[in-house]
Each structure stands twice: as structure tokens, then as C-alpha cells.
Amino acid sequence: MKKAKTDELLQWDRDHLIHSMWPMGTNRGVVFDTAEGVILRDTEGKEYIDSSSQLVNVNIGHGRKEVIEAIVEQLGKLQYTTTYWGFTNTAAIRCAKKLAEITPPGLKHFFFTSGGSESVETAFKIARNFWHAKKPEKNKIISLYHSFHGVSFGTLSATSLGMGRLWKSYGPLVPGFLHIPSYYCYRCAFGLEYPGCQLKCANFLAETIEQEGRDSVAAFIAEPVQGSAGMICPPPEYWPRVRQICSEMGVLLIADEVMSGFGRTGKLFAVENWGVIPDIMTMAKGITSGYIPFGAVAIREEVYQELRNRQTPFLHGFTYSGHAVGAAAAIRDMEIIVGEKLADNAARMGKYALGRLREEFLPLPAVGDVNGLGLMIGIEYVEDKKTRAVSKKVMEISQKIQDRALRDGLFLRVSGSRITLSPPLIINQEQMDKILTILKPIVAEIPQMA
Image (cartoon, rainbow, N blue to C red; front, side, top):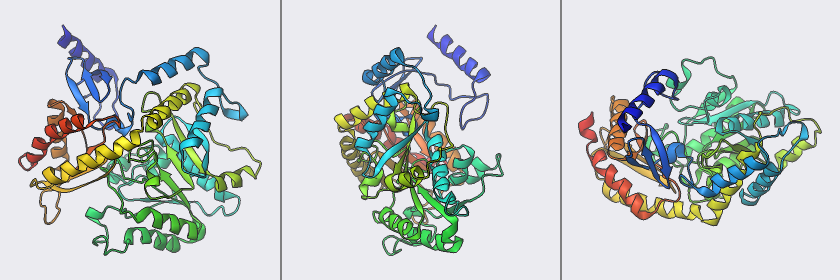
């Protein structure tokens, strides 16, 4: 009886539901039905360990009754009011105050959104608006190779990951966006080795700004850790150097913390790992741990005062900006992350996992590199460890890895040739060991998958 129900659901799915990043009219053949902690269950009762926090957003784990109760309580009091035209609501105000208590110093003013793409779009508009009154020609946005900032038109124009695949059907894109090499040390675009490279990737930002003209570049945006590209971590000097360049050359620095924020890297916000304070910071995902759509943009004091002193309306907004229910969920989510010290647990579990991966996985014939920060961990598989060559069948192999993991009870995310681990921040050592136990034989068999 149960199987018939699943088959019927899957058919309805094929008939009516369009999936992101997946061929229309098809699905993976699994219907998730319930979840708790780090465990997902499908309609057949099979359990899967969620080693990716879904889209790296379920930071507090599945099924936390505290957040669910906060949502229900807010729905019982006030469901929705606009925050347009100076109107406000209690939950949005309290959420902004709570955020101000935990964000890096100087980032105490917030614009609320419904998610990551909206947050990044807002950041771009703030950056251009900041310069418009003084230097309207100062409007270019620089981002990195391998970056992912969203799939709306502005964010897609800044996104470099999968350029041909994501871009080709939607051009032309928004003008004024440039891309430069990222901090991908394992595959350095300049053919250099760290630390002898003298941080060429960061210094190239200064060269690009100078080449384009300081009076034409509004902002530089980057993820503290490149998440969708496979959890690529920067060298420790990268972010301090970028902050210095942007300050000296009059360019706003945007930190895209949509994925890395709210404890994911072992700090509440990833930029805290390097003591860097951006001018604008985007947030979403972990702000409600995916329980309900919500996002935010933080603006540094100096930027905020410049905009405020103009005494003109901020002509930007979304219907659901400052949604009361989303704000209530975010407040409770932040209380859990801070109160249970989940950032500290992310640091501990990340260090533990990296230790095992370097000792047990790195010697495997197909593993070329392992790196990570907190619970943003990447394992890069290669065809040849000496040349670091990637198989021409990389997409096919990655699909096989994911399918095998799913069969063995592991919800796994693979990006290109990088297998990623980003479980909920509540994960314990026993659960991490189970993830690695399932994953190791799969990684060991990669050479046979080609």
C-alpha cells in the first residue's frame, strides 16, 4: 500500500512539479516525508543522514519544536503587515535588534528580504546607490571565478560558477559585472603555489580596480568560503588583504554570508575568522535554518549614515520584506545557535572530520585535496593526483557518487569534482563517523566509476 502511494506521488510530481537544476518531467525517485535532527525519512520509511543540511541551510537541524512554536505563536498574533512607507511590526523590530547583538561591530542596520538572491540583489543596489549621488559612473561590481551569488538576473551576472551552463539560456546579462580569479589554491589560475604566490589572487583585485579605473568600480563581492563551488577555503591572509585594498581604493566590500553565516564556519559569521568587517553583508539560509523563507542585508555604519543623510526614500523593496513570521522564526533560530554554542560545535566537528579525511581519505587514489573551515568541507576527486587532471566524465561520476550515497542512506551534495560535507551544526561525533563510514568505500571506488 505504501509503495503505491509513493509511486502515485512521484507520478504527480512528474506531471506537475518543476524542479530547480533538474530536467523537467523527471525526479530522483525519492519522496521525503519527515525529518528530525540530522535524519531525513522518505515515504517508504528509509532513513538518510543529511550530510549537506539540504542546501547548507538547516543549521539547527530538522524538527526543532522551538522554532515551529515561534512560527505558530506569531501566526496567532499577526500574520503579515508591510514594512513599506515606514510601517513596521514588533517581530521585525525585535529581529533587527537581535541581529545587531550578534553581527560584527559596525554592522547594525538591516534590510530584510525573503532569501539569498534578494539579499545579494539588495546589496548591489545599495552599493550603486551609495556612489550614485557622488560618482554615478562608479557602478561596476567585481566578483570571483567559481562564485555563486544567486540566479536572479543581477546575482546571476555576478555568479561565475558554471558560467556556460547557468548563463547560456538567459543572456544578455546585466552590464557592469566583472570576474577575476578566486582564491582556489589547489587550482590556481595563475599557476602559482601558496605561500610563494605572495597572494597574487588578492593583489589582482587591486590591479583590476586600477585597470578599470577607481572611479568606475562600486564594489567587490565574495563568499568568505566558496560554498556552491565545493567548499573552497581562502588562504588566511586573503580577506585581510582584500579589506585593505577596498579601503585604500575606495571600493565597497560585500561579504556574501548567505551560506557561511550563523555558525557554519566555527564563528557566528565567517569574516570573524579573519577579523574583517565588510561594508555590506548578505545573509539568509541559516538565519531561519530553512524553516521559513527569510534573509537580511547588514550595512556598515558609514554607509548607512551616508544614505540616511540624503533624506531621500530608499526606493527598493519586496512584498515580504520584514515578514513578521519570518522574523519570529529568525529570532528563535538565533537564540538556539547562540545559546547552544553551535558555532563552537561546528568548529570541533569540522576539525575532527578534517583530521579523519586527511588521514584516511587523502591517501585514496582518486582524492587530490581535502580542505574546509568549520562544517564547510570539500573533498576534491581527480583522475591523476600528480597532474590534478579531472575526468572528462566528471558530471557522470558525480551523479554516480550521489546515487550510491542515497542508496546507502546518505544525502550527499557533490559540486563538479568536489564532494562536500556540511551537515547541521548539531551533529555529534558518532553521526559524523557514520557519514564518513558510508562515504569512504564510495570514494575508494571512484576510479572504477569512470
